[in-house]
Length: 417
Image 1 (cartoon, one colour):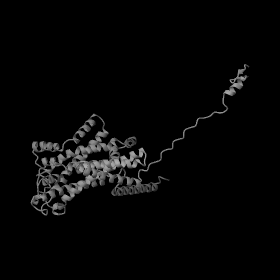
Image 2 (tube, rainbow, N blue to C red):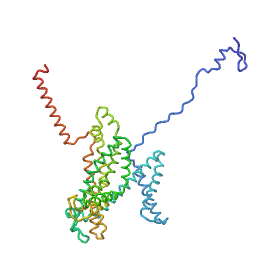
Image 3 (cartoon, rainbow, N blue to C red):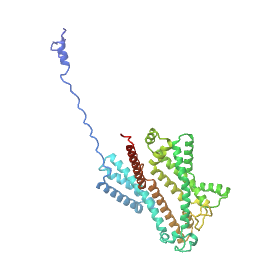
Image 4 (cartoon, rainbow, N blue to C red):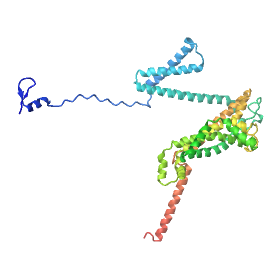
């Protein structure tokens, strides 16, 4: 064995002793960094007092700053500019106030929340102002019963509000919208089903046509019916022609909205139906349509709301009249939008009140159609009405009685012996 000279120069040592001297007796691990604690959950639904005070303080400061700018410092003027500047200052002050107590992530979250809520409040306030202004201007005509029970034969510009009414326009609107939706609703839903269930170049072509018709000016529908049915085929001005023009207007809206609703349906439902052996038609009828029923009701309401407020197609196809007409195939027929358009052009305060009263009735009709559609189609998939539950229970009782009779018959014949 060869001796190894000691590194310290103090003589030679054996090789085993040298290895033992070079290797430490135990391993020393470096210190691990402290584990970062998971961030706590931020409450999203709790309204704290500090948040309320921050909103109030920012709003007061923004109003005061804008008033100072508009009155003393700058030559600004105009109520719209005042509200715009106030809103920007409110957002700025609110961000500054919450930045004192919150971190950057919370500040961004609160800032986005206050911007979205303030814009939503602005939209609701604008809608409420339009409704309140319309109702207030039309209230002098709405309080009279003759406005709902008489036509416009005695409703001249100089006649008081106790004479004449809008019954002819109400009846005409209901007949026209009934004809239009009776055509647009089934065709629009069928077109949406075809675009989703039958892929191919033809369905893509139909989707392109529907998208193009959605942006089509409404007067083109009236001009098309006027040129084809009235000028070429000799059809007179009537409610049927107006209903066809309104159907052309509402059809792309119903088809496009129904197409979007059908695209949002989970694909696993149809795949499960096909896996159980159901065909395409039974899948569409018993799975697809019940699942998206509420969305289809919304699509129909959008189409009806688009058609019920049209004026130009009605003027070109149905004409204008002050007489009550229940026959959509003969003679001109009035509508509420056209009635309001003609009355608002008169300088008389009586005609102005009748015009805004007709506009209020249009709002009421749209809300009534919306409630009716939600009542009919707003149930979820598998939810039965009271009548359907009664019929289902009666059918179950009949089946049970039939099974009991069969069991008794088989027992008397000794089949179960």
